[in-house]
Image (cartoon, rainbow, N blue to C red):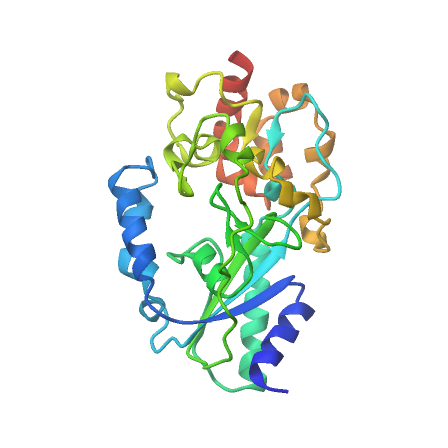
Length: 306
């Protein structure tokens, strides 16, 4: 078995749903887009987006001698949904923190490659380093970028985590995805509660509900966003929920992403009465810990008051 097929086979064994490989090159077009996006302050208070610009567009800055960028998709679509009339949580946050789950899988894949192919240089990334993972997914043939900025896979929609493994190993490369199957559909644009989705697949991050409920650390939320959260307490799935391609979504096989019982069982009153001590205990390994108890309480107060 050649090493490219070995990597793809082992990624499946580790639970990843899709694996694509692209040649490590500088992302010149993305560099221009990112520069314009930052100049327009669409990152809001997410100032970390301004850092490490060179690293974002050049994989060899992250892994010296980089030759290949391996992109892996892991489905997180849940088999159960929250009850209606409760504060809403984005589906990616139903279970265990994906950073913990995917980093373990990436480390296992790197170990397997070193044991079977050789002592290669490689680093795995999952949403925690300056990597333009959706671009690499497109270049690896795993899907196209939708109007809502998400990667859409023709077979299973967009409820995927994207992980990246950059290595100095030369591999066989997949063809980039050139078709865009969004067509004239504008459901995501029309349904966005805060008008954060702009033409030409541009997302104004400073208007996104996920930004306000997770990234924004101030205790006050701007007046122009009042009455627009549509009940979302942590993140937002509106643009994905209305996407026709997500009718093909299938429940994840990753048991770590099974919903924490409280996510499904809590009532609105349970969330309002949740103590900081209980929050830390229940959600110790959940993405919700990123907002912290104070952030959740702030978001609850906001969606309750408007």
